[in-house]
Image 1: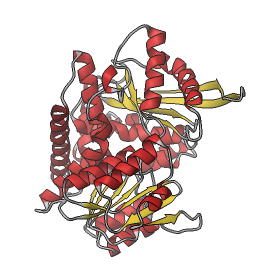
Image 2: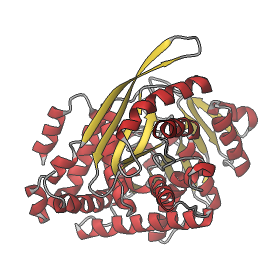
Image 3: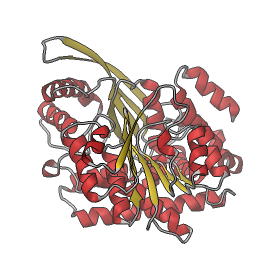
Image 4: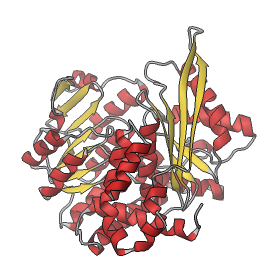
Length: 449
């Protein structure tokens, strides 16, 4: 297996996130390949690691000062063995092909775990929407999607939102696609409820994360009741993870953004969460403004020379990294273990580095990888696609019940796959094995293409 990883590194230089994702999956599925030689014979993992298509394009647009700006746009269509490509669009200065390949590769397994017919893809741009006017964001989105429309379709590739792409951006892009094609089709998910979107889509990733955590705790005859919880991020996933923790009787105490974090020892109540939602979603403010409103909280600014994130050095029962990839290093993991954290659920994609994962598993911390625990978002996107195909809407209760059942099924499939291959209660190995087998069997059935 080491030669496969070395080949990936040679063929994809300078893409550490993609290498990291590949290594995790290769290590996890080794017992499957040993037990089932057909997967080696058909070179399934090598084929999965090579995108079916990578599209790169120029995006030119004009800012409010009349200056022409130039960005790069991408779409990585990784694997369509079990359904049309499905995965978000990310607008952030850090976007480059390596990050998108990592995200698209993770998406293959995440989508397979949902049980819905969706392949893996990801896209985006190095455009930064922060500090831009609505008019500038609209002009960028329109020019970005003029090119994107050539490569997608509701039975081909269905993008969604991700970091930097929310309801505003989805609306501008959907309008552009409709104008170009003269069709009202479900070519994007995350749409407004009044024009093809699904109820509960906004809440789905954060809610699904906590549903999965509740399943993990119930497996150990425990619950979320009275659990002190650390959450990073203050965007959509973090907001709704906090909300669902409150619904289940837990006590969320932190939130963060790229500048720093707040710690509210008294707990973030629904009233305080509503303040965060208004601050981040409407006013586009910074999390430090929370302490101006609530004196019970402390604000800690990020420092470039810190070896660890102090947010993870707080006594707690559960931790939910919901910000971005590789935000939790080994020292952070050591601090969590030292401070009594017994469950870590990834709300972001791959927020724990490999050494951090190894450390928490060695110390019997319940750990769920993002491809399992944050799959609620794409699962509800799949439900939105289903509604668009049918031309109907499901109620909030119907969508929420489907989401709960999907997260429960993912939990059970992870456990059963892990136990079958000798790794009882290891959700990381179980998630990778379960997703891999489903996609691998479909690839073999469809021949060498």
